[in-house]
Length: 88
Image 1 (tube, helix red, strand yellow):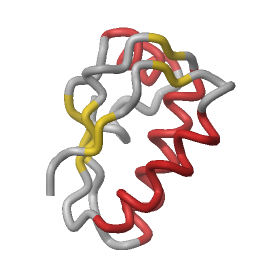
Image 2: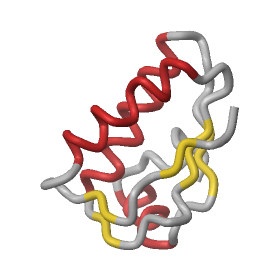
Image 3: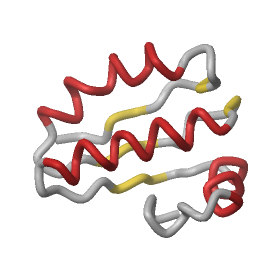
């Protein structure tokens, strides 16, 4: 399966709707990979969304991989101490 592409913007305003869109794709993925390269506008909600995606993958015994993380996403994940959990 190809990577699940994140939208250009994930902030508190979009996080819930974005997660709802991603859930069926995550459930269908045998090897869940998220492509974050198109993500340009984000806040801590993007980190929370990825943690929830990781949790859902782990519940199925799978490991989530995040590719193409923009610097701001990596910085926020590091600030919150979850960069290693997300593989960033």
